[in-house]
Image 1: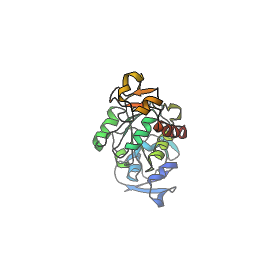
Image 2: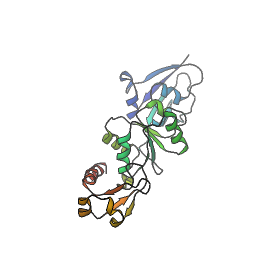
Image 3: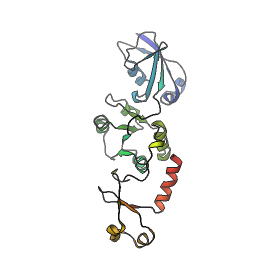
Image 4: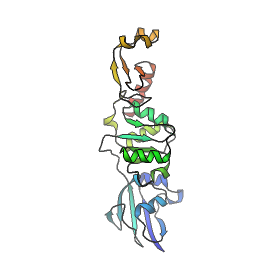
Length: 232
């Protein structure tokens, strides 16, 4: 039997039991075990892991743990060096609408199984958003985030902060229903689809070329604008 000692920093403590938070945690193990595997045995998903120090030296998360190692793990940095593209699990429908409203590419279906979500995240190089830490622990998941809040608005703020997206917000560029980029459309083209008051008071319209949903700056726009201002 071998023993290693883990110390987690920052938001990684969210995944630990109460008596482990901010404390050095003893882990007993047998055979060859990677740091990532032992961290996940304590509840910390590997996509949340950033810098690792082993006995005071920087190491990779694939390092095989040795008897007596003292390991410190910090959360991954708040950044997204590439254009963010997300896939969300089936419990995050309202979050997907908020993120689409902010202009982000969010793939969402309410009947995706965990295996399908992991496959999409891997093959399409999307960031997986979920509250299921076990789903994030699947080996094929490279990038992901475990949401802490149950409130969709707070969840959106979490995602913006975690991936440093404030400068990438482009509100009202995507369809809230199907995620497709919107296009401007002349009022005359869709006149027969509009209610009388909408025809009278609004002149600027957008349409989703995929599902044909029409958007204009009505009361819903004002509510969404307040959310955008809060996020930005």
